[in-house]
Length: 410
Image (cartoon, rainbow, N blue to C red; front, side, top):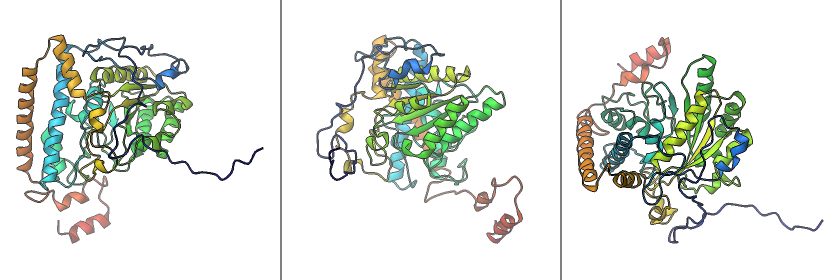
């Protein structure tokens, strides 16, 4: 055997760095409507190729085409458009509030609005999401009050979580939104466990696990796939591939698998990739996966191919690791504009009505912000009571906590 010489350590490199020309030549985009829609009870082994394609419904002309189209009425699509517009406006106001020192931290959804807003409409009341910090659209699309979300961001006296969570880490059992964990990937295995418990108790509710592309490198992701596949848990395993972790391109976590959806193949889990900036496609795939789960056919892994147009958070400067114009070059476009154009093409919407809707939504968001700020912000106004930190920890408060509360004078 010939001597191969010294070993070399391999570190994946992004296609382009700051100052370079954005390059998405590695993103193969199938023609809209070209990916088939298999039966819900399909044998996962027969659709392995779907882990390497991208399901799309909206074509370049704004038309809905192919077997995944036709599930939503014009009224439902208009509602979805308003949800995405509301989330985008909410983001802009809260980003500004952080810059003004009214909160310590914020994370935008810019460019990813379709993923969570469309997904939520595929679920039923009682289903539980185990989200990351970039799925606030699940709450917006389910009618959760913006004022409550803002109170949580400001950690004020009306904060439903009593100041005990980081900003944007909401929680609402009523709206199927499990409390967010700052330790990424931990909730993937928890979602599978919740789904298993639902099946054990002969319930009808399913779970949805959420993770970003970077966090799929965590061990919890792989543990979740083991349990989900072994016990056929009624869970949808969502991977939001927005191309970037906090400052690391997706290739670091993806490794040699080609796609994140392909991770599911080794576990016998049906795996699909969907255009994450196509509201109709996201909803159709989520509906398909939910039907599988409810029919006791087990988990589905879904990779949403999208792009993080903004910074990772208000603590991040993306210009340090990617070209400034990269978001403009993203080939799958803007989810809000694409749905708007589709509705205009159908005659159900117009540029004038869109402009009017933008003004109405901005007015509603500003009104909610004023109400929330009347209860206090980070450095002004009302705060949660110190007593709150002792409440809700145990069903019955143990003596040592009772003593600590007395010592704190609350």
